[in-house]
Image (cartoon, rainbow, N blue to C red; front, side, top):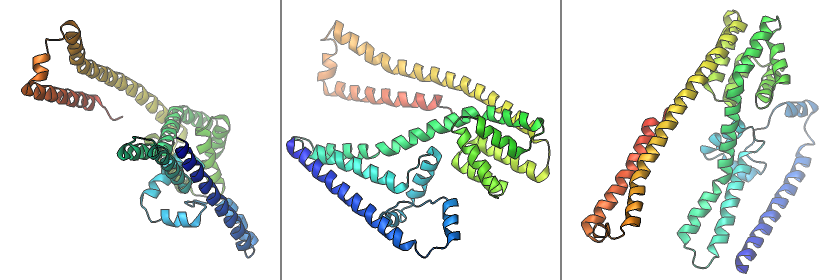
Length: 315
């Protein structure tokens, strides 16, 4: 146990020393490289968002060679986390390495178990990002009908769409206010509506957001009553949410039925073993009976997943 903590301490010290040395070197290089830049370049740098993979150049160059980096970058943007891909991958490697170093020094710990635990722990940061992304998208989707109704009322009152969008960003709560504020700022900086709405749909990959973006783009090109369009769109979304709730209730009932049908044989076997322990002994001891038990368990598990597949409805 002492050896395990010693190895972990040495690993953490080496990791922190390397991180501090990298940060110091990066600061020095930034100071020397910034002398020849003009004032206009500094202004552009402040306005544009830097989408670098990592602040460590070698690590960023290594990550740029892989295709999965774009997916990770999109997940981080959809989760609205101020992390870079380099930070996320470093956290994954660090957590997996720490768990592997701890488990490999335990007496009697198989190497395969240590490797599986290390891989599982390495996925913890990504699972956190995915969970935060799904929670954020669910909140945004729940708040979107009220936001569209707000925009429709503001447009009927005579306000321009840009002013209505700013009012919505000021009065709503995150994550809706954050995305509407970014949409408003991009438009105020001169970005066309098509590009700004495409950026919104990329950051919030929901079907309803795509419909909202298409409605605004169509109105900007052909004209029409945008307030009426947004009001009907909000009403349609609410009706779809109600229908989704009913479908989820039916699907939950089907999943519960499948779970009960799966547990009934297990409960019956348990009761029989409690009432008459010798009743199933011939089945357990005979080779043919053992094969029948394995086949029954396999069929039971397969039936459970088949039932869940049947009642699973994509919404």
